[in-house]
Length: 581
Image 1 (cartoon, rainbow, N blue to C red):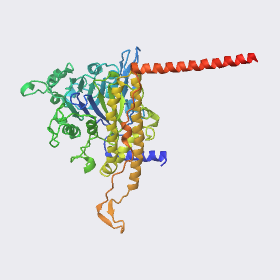
Image 2 (spheres, one colour; image 1 turned 90 degrees about the vertical axis):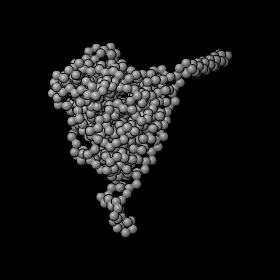
Image 3 (cartoon, rainbow, N blue to C red; image 1 turned 120 degrees about the vertical axis):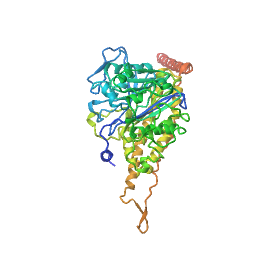
Image 4 (tube, rainbow, N blue to C red; image 1 turned 180 degrees about the horizontal axis):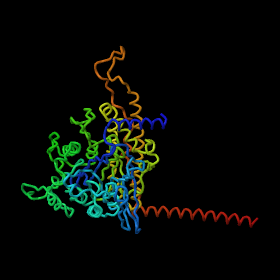
């Protein structure tokens, strides 16, 4: 198939899918996960979020370099960039997952989505949530205030700890106000924080317990500050509510008389199945012994809860792909069109930020990023210590190429197209499941390999460690992009072979139409996921490595001197013979 024809077909598929969905052109719809260090299977801290937006919005991965002692710089605060915040003279190096220039977004929003800096501070923002009318009337949004598209960069470039990052974020709201109602997750190697931003100036941040997990959709869930070890709140969080008559207090036990943040700033009237069902399935998947019942819109689910067992990367990846699998709400098995799932076709990117507390901060963080929807895509690793990103994953599609669905150049489009082709009752089992199963095997190799890479990198000097993790991450990214293109070709080929408006079976000899619907066998995937299990040997480093290098160099020098002496001796001998002649 010619490249141009292939692009046209894929573009038409995407346009058709968007028309069928009937959703709004732009909407914020994300799901987030937190796994504390003591709740994780490997002792890491995990933050995850799908960055969802209806339409086609290509994303990429980027490294922002450290800037030393350079005064006078600013960074946007507001959506249109008219309000700028001053930066410190020195800003830190970090990885990010921004939109491409070709994304169809008003005012040029960049939205770095997920960041980890050189000090191992990581942040993802935002999960959009909703405050009630009374709260918004008392303290409206600030039109030119802080937006999620600017917050990650502004905070992460100047924070050496999670606590400092929280303070920077909250000080931005104190100074400029907020233009949105958002939720942020921030962590370093020692602690994790959760921030709810309710109105133009009101917020509450809490330190999350290390032995708990969280899963939530687009809704506030925090109730009482006393449930958390530490908290930071806006000066008027309680007095504003009291003054304007919308404060709600606890009535029983130790909570009696304490401000209930959920009831005060949000409330059950804002609880919707659209958001609440994702919160429910997260609780049920991680703690089925407690949350085993069917979905109930009126049931409250706590922000933090104890998982039934330790949670690892495979569980988080499965959760971020979840489409209410195995329940009566599964849109791919039931054909339901009223379900907002976690693993949605609208993801611009999905990311898991993972932090190893026992590694050097400069290489302790890993962004597991899936460009485009994760349902039929894959996570690939990006260490916070990398010096560069593979060409395909870092390349920025220019603004003038907006609307070009380029699967040959950008991974995002391959994963977006795979999702469009594999989703739905007619496609999920035949094409989607084989693709998803392959990516799960690929991820298993990378999830097992990355800890080995980081352990080896910890024994190297900083430059060698950076090169080593860069090479590994780039190799995984290149392999995933190559496999994605091949899988996309296979799915398109198989769907073309199976295309037939007659869905009923027939007798192959008599051509008599049968009473049963024809059944297609699942597509076979010939790719081998073993490539993702490869972990390269670390280069020789340290005293023994340097000594062996010096020894080899010395031997080479000695050998060179010996050869030179032999040549000189030969020249002298020839010249002496000529003189004798």
